[in-house]
Length: 97
Image (cartoon, rainbow, N blue to C red):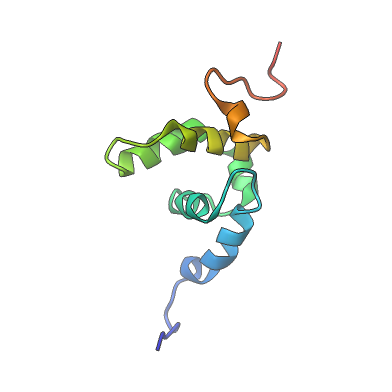
């Protein structure tokens, strides 16, 4: 039997945060858990985050190897566009000449 007494607020809110993060484009259960582990708890935080910095931190935690499609998914989540449109070279929407 699991006892929630003494459980911190982050652990209690994790299921709710995971569901909210999955509302972002390109983000499923695994990516939502990765974002949560990186300190991103809400879609609003993702909208202000640096996808490249998040990717580099996660890559570092994975021993230096991580597929770039994770970066593309993070970019798409931030900008609300499908990940294939976020491949290199990438120019965020609104910054195109």
